[in-house]
Length: 289
Image (cartoon, rainbow, N blue to C red; front, side, top):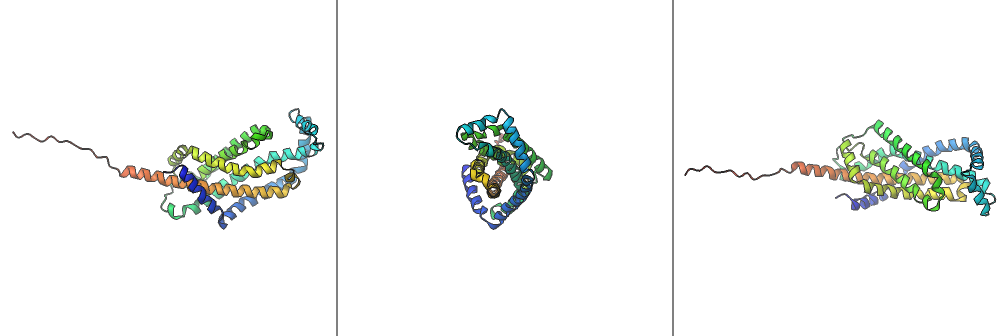
């Protein structure tokens, strides 16, 4: 029976698999792509973005109280670093979502192919329940929903308890949606995919949130450490690679869990098909009295 036991079993398999050199390379590839793209974008927009953000923070009645409160608390140079801190907090969700989307769209299929070649999944038929365009639309739509939720909740990320709760929930929800779809895209039919996601909704959500909590560690350091602001380029590259490695681990975790669940589902269907209902037919013998 696939359930909590399989969650822990697939966790262990994913943990061991993440240390494989090929998986480490699969985590480096999207990290390098995202680092180059966002590095160029940040380099081009850093100064004008900080100037525009400083003007907004100074004139906005919704954020000026933050600066005044920091100055009142003894942080006399708060105005010098409040704009960079806001800028970092704004781009962290964008970078994280773009990295997760890239991994889900380009790396997860490779991971699924590698795992599917293992002995326990031999003979697992590919029913092609999802295609390239379906995955693209599903990925972009999920990312847009998550981005909207991030923008709606970003103002309260400054509240100490919520900064440790909201990011894991958001990354966990997005991770569950993207990984569940892409892992089953080739091997499961549309009906099988919908059935598995519905049947194991809560274990999958727990797995997503757990992955999100792991991903929240670099987010928390990145957004709250003064050292992260001083060494922003170095810290950002290290944090991005940690994100990428965590997402590859999550892809392995979801792949092992869902392929095993798909195998169990098909075995149940086969057992039902081979079970022939038997009925006892009572025939009345003719009377020859």
